[in-house]
Amino acid sequence: MNSQNFQAKTMLSKRIIPCLDIKNGRTVKGVHFQDLKDAGDPVALAAQYAEQGADELVFLDITATEDARETMASLVLEVSKAIDIPFTVGGGIRSVSDVEKLLKNGADKISINSSAVRNPALIDELAQAFGSQCVVVAIDAKQINSLWKVHLVGGKVPTELDLFEWAQEAADRGAGELLFTSMDHDGSKQGYALESLAHLSEQLHIPIIASGGAGVPKHFLDAFTLGKADAVLAASVFHFGEIPIPNLKMYLATQGIAIRK
Image (tube, rainbow, N blue to C red; front, top):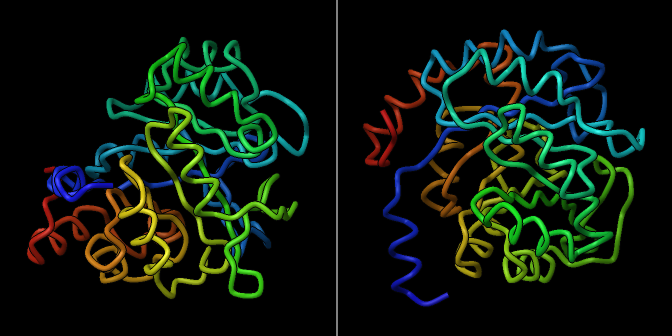
């Protein structure tokens, strides 16, 4: 990416995005994608986060792909009635018609992961049908022998696909944003995968959302500065009240980060 594009990308306001992983209609959260614990009602949490000043929300139906079923459109409709901020929905999306249902029920963007790897042309189809701004490609990756390898089906199925090569292809095919989750950092509360985040942000012309590892406010700051992320996503620190969103935004503003009010 040329320096002019990178400069334009970094001047945009940074976003704070709570992520709600959904299983059996409830919000859950684990560590390294395992040992899931209940974190509350997704609609109530969504309304709470919107009121607290979250910029966007992400809802991931984490067992839809594994169960070979569609994302819960009824839940999307409930959420759309409860909040007034943009939200992204993912899990089990395999076709244009799947996306049509979710957008009709109020979703602003959709996220595809396993289905995009299995059928990369799906990215092109969705970008052409709904616009790139609607298409988020999520990538779950883990370091194996020092190489970042893409994993599918909620992190359960390893592939030989390289994180950076797949990210480039996704962007070239029309993804509007990339959501990168480090499985090694997920739920660890030890900070984000900063070096890889920075690599992705410098490599690609589209916004990068950092996911996996938030534990304290400085981790968000590091993701924006050292990791050069455009948005930072977190779950447990918000779900269990460890970092209130208003406090986080105040902290980031004092550190010179352009934050939406």
